[in-house]
Amino acid sequence: MSDVELQALLRQVLWAGFGLGTLFGVIAQRTHFCTMGAVADVVNIGDWTRMRMWVLAMGTAMLGFNAMVSAGWIKASATVYAVPGWLWMSDLVGGLMFGFGMVLASGCGSKTLVRIGAGNLKSVAVFCVLGLSAFATIKGITAVLRVNTVDTLVITLPAGQDLPSLASASFGGTAAGHALWLGVAIGGALLVWALMRREGRSADVLLGGLGIGALVVAGWWVSGRMGHLAEHPQTLEEVFLATNSQRMESFSFVAPYAYLIDYLMFFSDKSKTLSLGVAITIGVIVGSGVAALLAGTFRWEGFRGVEDTANHLVGAVLMGVGGVTAVGCTIGQGLSGMSTLSLGSFLAVASIIGGAVLALRWQVWRLERSA
Image (cartoon, rainbow, N blue to C red; front, side, top):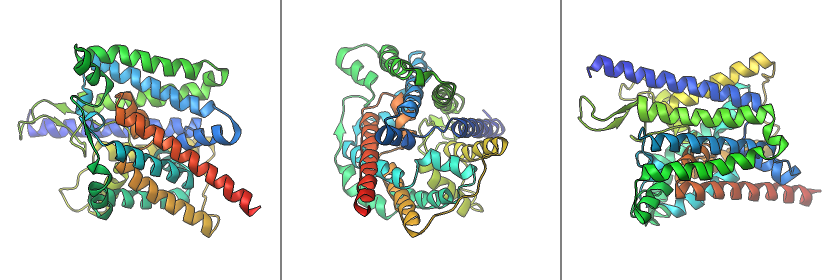
């Protein structure tokens, strides 16, 4: 492959990521797809509609990812979620922080982008603070704290921490073979649960669940197939083009915030280049903005007061630090990570939900106390 062909392929990967992100923004704006909102609906009013949408997306992503693994197209071991070293305390603590923070900030990373596209200035502030906090936890002061505390507690597994690899190491056979039946069993069960009630079969739930889940699968294909080179023409090493982690990536909305801010701040530095995650992030804002304008729902919105400002900024910090510590958010771990059937993703998602429930209960307690 020549340098010209390599650059052309790189552009294709980035444009594909932007396109997928744009579709994500359109669907999320149209269907009100939001994990924090789903948890809040269940806790506050007992409505499981949006939770079924999120679970439907999760099951769809699982089925699609593991179908590609069983076909030999991609490998879970090529992702950040399925490495043998399981940082269980990082998943636990980071997930709790992220879950609590997303309630204070009125939404997770993906919802923040969707709201920016619809004119929410509060979400612009959340974006900036979350991105800076995430960058500090990747390379800065909180990164040192993370590495020297929770990241020291690691369980080294005999194979990758994804269930197909663990099944292969324990019972024989190939990870690809186990991925097929595990993906169908777990992903299929999630789909059945999501669709078993009437509210899980509404048009918005089907569009949000199946659409977002399919986009996560498409993201894996773009990174793991289109952007995969078994041998880079310059380094002669395996590479996944346009990824910050140097591994196969799909949708995630914490670290890409940091890399987008870094790219914008040091744009004249030629070593700073766009990545798949950044292209997806920009696409979500654009897609949401287009959908909001077409639907006539674009509205400028600002903070209500000091307390509202403080809640959003504190929530953004918790999401930035927690999301990097847990290696993902409600989309990064909740959909992309869960699709790999990773132990870390199961724990991180449970912790995120737990943190969100705690924050919602705390808000109710504060309201009752003030009353």
